[in-house]
Length: 425
Image (cartoon, rainbow, N blue to C red; front, side, top):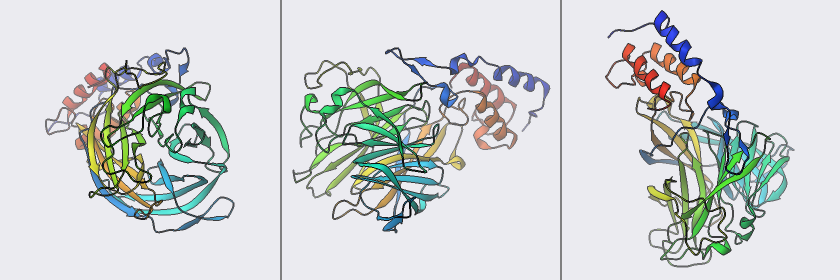
């Protein structure tokens, strides 16, 4: 096959012209509320979300350590792990509910995306104890974000000192959360740095809790990052959970226990049902959410009377992993990236707060359609994609075969820039 050098004059001029595109599109977006969201904080513009190709269960790794030590040298027992997030490609943080404790550990992934080891390295004591349920790492500030079910707020804390440095409250309607059915979930969107959270089951004005015949209404809350450094709720969307999967027992529920924002902006939900059933006490369902034609229900005092269009969802996976409470985006499986798809690990956390569950980390592999104009798969289309494309192209990597003709050559350069210039594929 014919190869064209990156240093060729005509390609060099082409690249220079493309890199000089207007930065105005990267600066900001205005919200309907008049606030300004910080898109430029993450250095790229958001692109349209695509449909998840597949979600495959991989493996579950049991955590062997029963105790760890916090930043002050105090030991504590590891229990009640509820939310999890990745701090980098090989480090996770998991928060313990009804406490002020966070567990930080190392994770090793196989080339196929499955977890091969997970080891607790240290603990962290937060400056105030609460019922922390969800966790998300904010790479812009280096803080750990925690959703607090007691106060229905999101708290940002230092990973070094444990001090709570910022508190973001939710709209007033969330003060109507039922006890132990509040903010279980939290995720930070890689493509724009915004936050998603949700109540586990219905707020009191929004209707009843889940039943064996009908799920409950919850509110998915999109929270924008502001240039001032804080966060503010931008929109709310109605979401119907699945019904309870068995007979009613103490603690029965069926609601949203976590959310994961994928690199392209797609949102997936983790639903957990607990009931007496021959299929097991727990049932896990993972869905892809579509916001097409969905209503912003922020102004509605109740979801119980209709008058709105809810989001829709598509089942990606169903099974029984006992008390799987948390789920988070893991590292990209770069070795499996192709011109049309990229794959990521998802990492979960199982809470040992019942007789049959143990502290464990399950993993999944999610396959997403790849827009090769976003070559570095960071959720935006910008100059960094050009650099990433040419690194792969010069190496003859199969991922640079963007026209899918079986070879890496000059025609791929043209195909890449046509898509890049249009801002999509």
